[in-house]
Length: 498
Ligand code: AHR
Image (cartoon, rainbow, N blue to C red; front, top):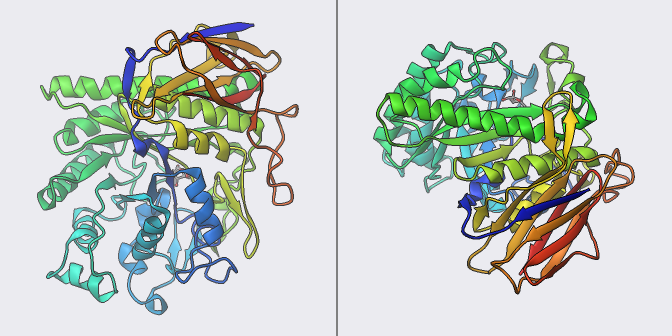
C-alpha cells in the first residue's frame, strides 16, 4: 500500500506550544515516593530527589508537570505538606485508600520542578475544600511576603514566591468516584467564584476549569457547557481527560484510539465555542488535555481493592510496542489541534502508567512509550502544518474506517528544520509514503528513526531496559521536493529534514 501527504508552510495550524509536552506527578502509588523522591536511594541528591530519574525526565523533554493530583487532590490539605518534615502529619488518602506521609509537598515539588527545568501546573482541592483554602494556597505560593501565609512560606526556608501561573480548578468533579463530586451547576459556581478571586489576586494567572473525566460519562459535553456558562469570563482553559485501554477493544480499534481523541477535541471545541457565542464573548477557550495515556484500566481492581499502604505498587502498567505506537498517534493528534490545545499532560511520569519505571533502591529505565514522547518533545518546534494525508483505510469495529497513516509535520522557521511524525496502523503491511515537499526543494533527510518490532508485544524491563528503542532506517530519501519512505507495520516514525 502507498500513502501521500503534502508539506507546505502556507498551511499552518498553529504554533507548537511547549506546554503540549506536559506530564503529571500525583501522590498515587509510587509516582512520588520511590519514583521521583527517594532519599535513601544511592542516586538521591541532597533534597532526596532521584538523580537517575531527573536525568530521564530531562531526556524525556517534559516541559510542564501537573501536581499533586488527580483524584488525590480532592481530599488533600496542602498545609500538611509544608514546614518541618518531622512535624508533618500522616494522613489517610481516601482517593487511593493509601497512607500519605506528607514527606513530599509543595516546596519539595517546586524544588524538584526547578531542578528538572519544568513549569509547574498546580491543581486545587475543590472537592472537600473551597475558595478560601484555594486562596490560602495561592497566597502561600505566590505572594512575596509581609502577610501571614507568605511569611509562613518564608519561615519554611523559601524566600522567593514560586510564581505559579497555571492552576487547575479542581479535578474530575463530574465523577461520582471523586471526593466532593458535584453537579455541573454546583461546580460551575464554585469554580467561577474561586477563579474570580484568584484573578483579583493576579489577573495574569491562567486557570483551567474541569471538563469531563472521560468521553463516555453521561454528562460529557453538557457538563462543559454548564461549567463554561458560569466560568467563561474567568478561565482560560477547559480540561480533557482520556485513557485508551488495550484490553477493552480489538487491536485494530486500539491502534485507532487517536480517532477517539480527535473527536473528543472537536466536541469540546464546539461546546466551548457555542458557549462563547451565547455569551457574545469573542475570547476563545483553550483546551488543556491534562490527563491522557494508554492505561490497561480494566486490569485495575478498583480503589476498594486497596488497603491503606504507603506508596503501594499501583497501576504499574508495562507498555509494549503497540502501546508506544498508540502514544505516538495521540501526540500526533494533539499537534494536529495546536490551534486550540494549549497544554497537555501525559499521565503519569514515574511508575504509575508512566514512561519512566523505577525499582526502590534499584534502577530506573525507559518504557516503550518514553520514545515517541521524547522525540516529539525534542523535535516538534515552530509551526504545525496541515498535511492532509491520503491513505488506505483500515476497517475497525469501534471507529469504522480509519486511515492507516496518521501524521503531522512541524516547521521550525528559525532552524529551517521540517519534522514529519507518522504512524502506520496497519498490522501486516508496510506503507510506502511519498511526501510532497515542493516548497522545500533542497530539503535533505537528516534522520529517520523508527520504533517497530517483529514482536509488537515486546516490552522493556529492568533486566532488558533497551529491548525496544527507536532505530535509524536506511532508504528514506528527499530529492527535488519529494520524500519517499517505508513505514513498517505497527510503527512510529520521526523523519527530520533540513
Ligand atoms: O491518573 C490516574 C487517575 O485518573 C487520576 O487520579 C484521575 O484524575 C483520573 O481518573
